[in-house]
Length: 126
Image (cartoon, rainbow, N blue to C red; front, side, top):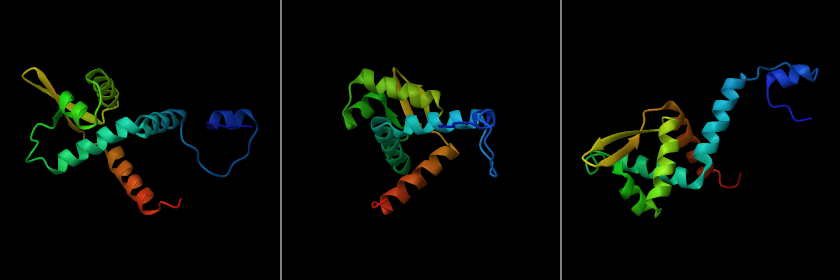
């Protein structure tokens, strides 16, 4: 019996002594993990994190073509990944001339994500 939400648990007559998240929170968690779990999007986020640390060298962030060249990806694939990250508000975008530049958003989920990556890297045996 797979139970994904409190409502399903209640419908199946389950007894529980702990708190489960709302369905909305569960959907948000699933969406965030699906987005950040994708290897290419994770690489984009890590690239933008590096750029953020080197902000003096990259005052506008990176353009779509910069990201495509660094990873390497096609422009269309890069644009699609950036659309997903933008929709989730994990990156900010701004236009300068005919180029769109991206940088990391100030989002607490990203702080938790970096912490998770760090912990997992330190504990490679997990």
